[in-house]
Length: 262
Image 1 (tube, helix red, strand yellow):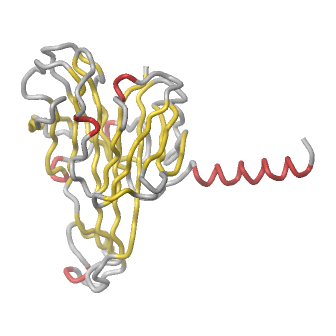
Image 2 (cartoon, rainbow, N blue to C red; image 1 turned 90 degrees about the horizontal axis):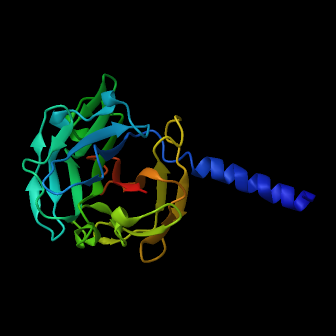
Image 3 (spheres, rainbow, N blue to C red; image 1 turned 90 degrees about the vertical axis):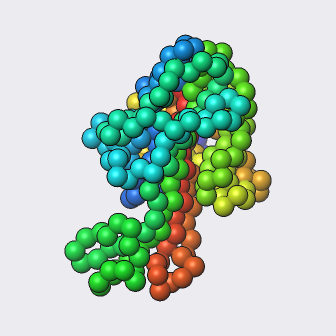
């Protein structure tokens, strides 16, 4: 390796170390299913986590008061509310009778969080607290794809209307190591130019560290190569100034997608 090649290699390595250790600070939200492929007439459970680590420790399961609802979407797009265990774990209320590819959806309580000298005030804007330091308005959304019996249907590829969303353009239930998963990222219903971060279970014990990263194109589409088997997590984020500076400083969006690669 000559000097020029060595220099370029070191620059690339440095940039990768920055890129793959991002995003940081805020907890990420995702769903971990107890199984990503079940037999017909069986039930399933999913746990919603807010964490810096993947897989997340049990203690990082989101508290019930921070959840709005958890849904299951059938292969033909029908939605059913999940049963709440009260411990961050949500299950199907009845066995799944129809085979195909399903989507689990977690919708947390989104809104303001304002930092004050006394700590963070969740659910309150700058105008609602004393001595505000900084305010953010966050919207997070999580999806997980699993199959009942033979994968099928196209509900996984349909947008659900979330403020930010990762939409797989190929059935994740059919993925194997080495395959490429094209995904489309939407922000407020429009294609988003952003980075898609991906990792798989047991890649590392380090916080906020990802095994894969790629950027979406002008159509909001990115391709993620399945470089390892196991449960995968994809995360996208965006942020901008809040429209009313007197009320809040920043608005933030985040979306996640989990699935299993054989």
